[in-house]
Image (cartoon, rainbow, N blue to C red; front, side, top):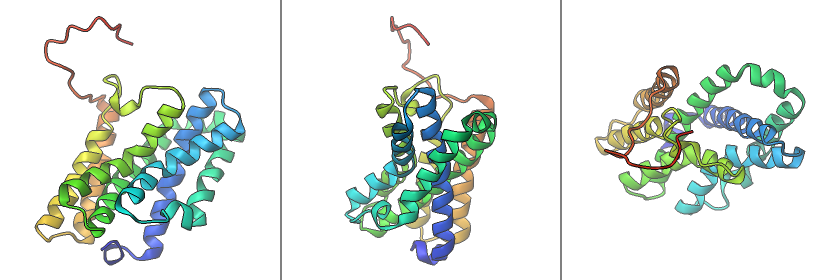
Length: 218
C-alpha cells in the first residue's frame, strides 16, 4: 500500500529526513545531559529508530528496517556528529528543528499506521502502532536520559495528540476505502499543523478533574 501511495525512492527519502531530525533532538538532549560522544550517538539512534523498530517487532517485519537499510543506521550517526561539533549553532536554530520534528511526527504516524495495516492488524491496532512509530523513539530517549517522557508531562505542548489524530485519519481512510496520496498527505499535514499550533499557542492536555495533588508543579 505504501508503494502504491509513494514511489520507493520518495518514501525512503522522507524516512531519512524524519530520522535525521529525530536524531538531532536526541543528540541535543544528550549534550544537555553532558553525555560523552558514545552516549550522544546512542541517544540519536534510539530517538530516530526506536519507534519504527518497536513497530516492526510487533508486526513481525523482521529483521526490522533499521537493521536492513544502512541509511537508517548511518543517518542518526551523521546527525550526532553534527551536534557534537556544532551543537551551539544547532541550538540556535531549535525553532527550525522543531518544525521539521513536527513534520517527521506527521509522516511517521501515517506511514506507521499504513505499514501495520499491511501486516494484517486491525484499524485500531494499526493506528496505535502508527502513534508508537511517531513517539516511541522520543519515549525511549527520555527514559534513557532519566527524564519523565515528554508526552506524559502536563507542562509540555501537545505531542501525542497530533499523532493520534493523524493515525486515526489514516485508519478512517482505510475503513472507507479512500486512502490515496492526497488523503494520506492530508493526514500528514493535519498532524503537522496541529503540532505547530500546539507549539505556537502552548496547547496542553487537561489534567485530572478537581486535582488535589501535593506534588509541586515544575
